[in-house]
Image 1 (cartoon, rainbow, N blue to C red):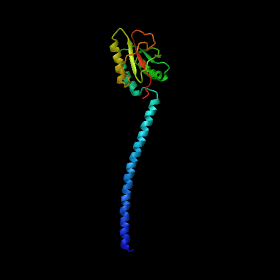
Image 2 (cartoon, rainbow, N blue to C red; image 1 turned 135 degrees about the horizontal axis):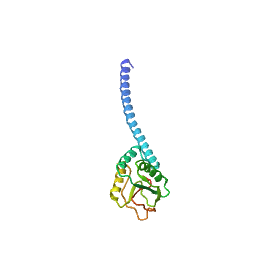
Image 3 (cartoon, one colour; image 1 turned 30 degrees about the vertical axis):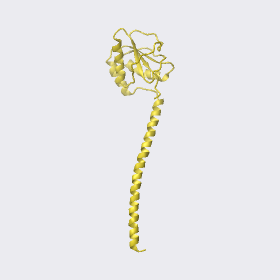
Length: 179
C-alpha cells in the first residue's frame, strides 16, 4: 500500500466517522425526547394518584375569592352538614366554615348527618321565608366564583337528619370523589 491509498482510506474513515457522529447526535436527541416524554407521563400519573388520596383543601386564592363574594352578601345563619363518619369532608367543611366565620356570618355547629352520597361536590339548601332562591343563588355564585365544585341538586327527603332552623342556609359537603 502506498501513501495515496492510506490518504484515501483515512478520508473515508473521516467521512464515515462524521456520519456516525451525526447519526449518534440525532439518535441521542430523539431518544432523549422519548425518555423525557415517558418521565413526564410517569410524573403526571403519580401526581394524579397522589391527588386522589390527598384530602381536599381550599387554596389561599380560593379563600380570597370566597371571602370577596361573601362580604358582598348580607350576613346570614349558615350550618355545614357533612356525611356521617367522614372526617375528610368534615375537615374540608371546617376550612370553608372558617371563611364564612371570618366574613361575619353566624356559623352554627357542624352537623355530620348526611345520609346521601354527593361525590366530590357541595350543594346547599335554605330554610327561609325571605327570598330563599336569591339567598341560595348568592351562596352558589360565591362558591363557583372561588372555584369550589358546587352543584345545585335536590336532596332525597330524609337524607338530612337535622332539625331545620328558620332563615338558615345549609351548606352540604359531599364525600371526596374517587376520581
